[in-house]
Length: 189
Image (cartoon, rainbow, N blue to C red):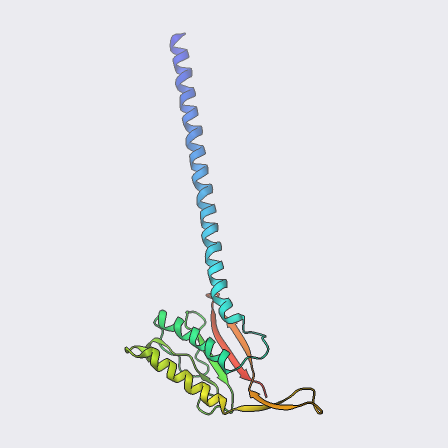
């Protein structure tokens, strides 16, 4: 009888150990899944925050050359950070990496029309890259200031005044990476 009671106590101890071990495995698995979900959600939030820097310009009214240069500068900073060389050609935009292309479509801006206006890592590898970029964008702004257009409020009887040409913005997001890879600014006529 004494051996039987010891055997039952041992069996109960083994059973309790198996239950505790099963509970620990369940909790570990459950916490791992929750952690992965939280990590994935954080990554998606970061991606959305990154993309919103560019998508906030899409559909916005009254965009000027200053907005174009702001977006091009953000893209340039991204391209330098990830050490991407500048893309060449209007159709050379890659959907599968983090290089961001900014294309300006304005036939009045000779030298800039239908061209990439962002910079890449190889264009800015020397010590004075910030000065080079600032000079490049200042030249773009000066060129755009020569492209002032007449505007009318309440035509035909309203006042006419001159102002900066306005742009529309189109942003494309890669289906592969989920990141913005192309921003096109088109001059309004």
